Image 1: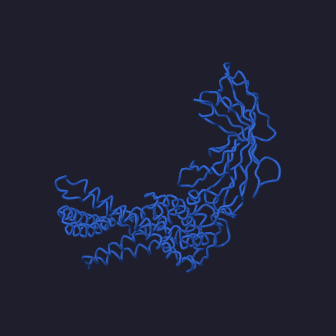
Image 2: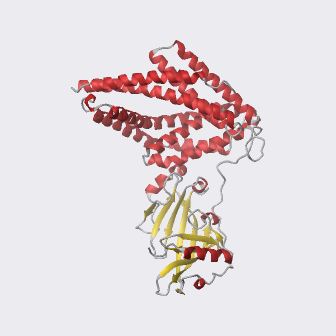
Image 3: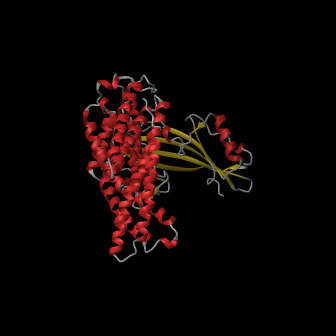
Length: 505
């Protein structure tokens, strides 16, 4: 292994420090004459620093040999993804990188906001035979642009790269003794030490009475409790947007869940915020969840049927059942995912994100928002729990499709109760966990019942289509019977779970 391709360590140093005598390191016979080089990194962002605030980044790197590359990082994607630019630094940002950042850019063009110029001296550490054992660089970086100072280095770094062994560790020990400090674990030599464009955070963190947000407890204003949860879920939505744009199945699921959590929290805790824009945003979140849901539902249905068919004895699978299921559900998924792509490129989506961001930055509170979080949230949990109880009671007189629809509504009520209890968790963790666990269990059992009901309807339709095409419909009927049994089992498990459902707060 060549030196420089193994372990690497970086250390922040003061400008006044002198590089220690590298030739005194064990095993080093000679230090080669230094090679001088220069690298440039141009960071792109929106003028207000939105990418940086949200944990995204985009930059163009030019090495001392003139080679240019673009780098972008996004919280849910591999941070080392790179795109080469063969037309020179004057060309635009590669379209695929801009696409990954649209959750934050929202149609805006990223612009250069800061240039980092790094000049370095690279020293080769040689053994007696002239073999390079390690390379040490002394780098000085200056920032130009927003947040930069006109003179003086923003950062100086000593770095050692070796093929392994004790030499790299010995050099690090020598650097520490000389006054250097480790550059951190960000993998880029303490990038956070470089001055960034200034900007506001995800929200102003103010309470309704104007004090700064601190550690949450039961006496904190309930407004802080809600804001903490909403901000977390908004960041989660932004995090998974790039994965959805790339067609990642789990990304669709995670983004849909974040969307539902946002909507549920805004609904359950609506009394502590002004009616608008919360009501309008709930409508937009419902729209987004439905768009994502159609693609997700096709994924779930296909997986469920694949498992059912695979579990059947071969002699009971008559005709091209698996092929027909795959063909139809893959078609449904592709069509649904096309609508997802359209939605994520729409002004409606971008405006919904803008609205959520504005709500989190400048919420409009009611007097209720000042109430202590513990009792205020508990009151909301009780209200949501009572609504679920009423829904379940209403199913006792229903049958058939009406019964199935009522249980589906009960599942949605259980989900809202679960998310409301998640908001409550930071200040009443024990009580909240009991409610979250119970509501999640009921939601899961009712979800299995609903999946079975939907699958039965799908199998009836598929069976009729197969018969019309001259195929054997036996397997569809058999699978339908299995799903009926699955639905009955889910009903029984729900009845058992409901008996032990928490009666407090």
